[in-house]
Amino acid sequence: MIQKIVTSALIAGFGAGLLSALLQFAFVQPILLHAEQFEGGELTHFGALGSSMSDAQHWVFDPGRDLLTIAFSTLIYAGYALMLLAAMVAAEERGHDLTPRAGLVWGVAGFVAVLLAPAFGLAPELPGMAAADVGARQIWWFATVAATGVGLWLVAFGRNWMMWGIAIILLAAPHIIGAPLPDVLTGPAPPELGAEFASRVLGTGLVVWAVLGMIAATLWQNAPDEG
Amino acid sequence: MNTQTQAIAKPTTKLATLIAVAFAGLMMITVAGHVQAAALHDAAHDVRHATGFPCH
Image (tube, rainbow over the protein chains, first blue to last red):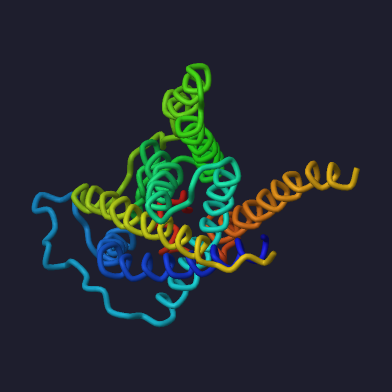
């Protein structure tokens, strides 16, 4: 089983990572590069005249930088794929069919757990944004992902109101406690860029996770059993 | 006796396998997405921003 699950997950994760890098280059990287001009001080925004959209960046392939993006993107989604498929197979073991359609639902749930729920407290960070201590944010991020993941599992597979009650508490608790936020807001980039960036990260993430879930389920279903 | 042992052992082995696989994935996410060592941070910088990880 371990060979089948690892192979299926790594192929699905590699494919999803490539898709993620592609979507990043098309939709996210131009905003990131634009924001870095504000972060580095080449552009300033908060004067009387604001800043011109003509300074917006077009993404041009930068091998040194973008090959690393492709490498880390595939690595991250391979890691996510291992975790996602392990959970999917655990559910299958309990009698829930793992069709590609179910994989789509799994992928969207994964998106909610690792991207949407953390982003509800810690919006995807435009370079230069003020933020609280990175260690505190990471702890909150991990705790939120874990609580949301378990919460969604209980929503899907819980059988009574006590389990659903626990699910609601787990899903809500990170946001009632609240993410660590900065004391002083010093972001140098226009809010228009920050808002667009956050939306793009969530939108591209949803597409990648949906595809990841479907590919993982399809590969798992079609992989030969090791016996 | 033999059959009984298998019936008990199999789900446990499967669960252990699934936990091991998930843990391997978690380690990959931690290294690629969270470890703050300068070289790793710089290399993964754009992806961390673009996939919603806490960065810097």
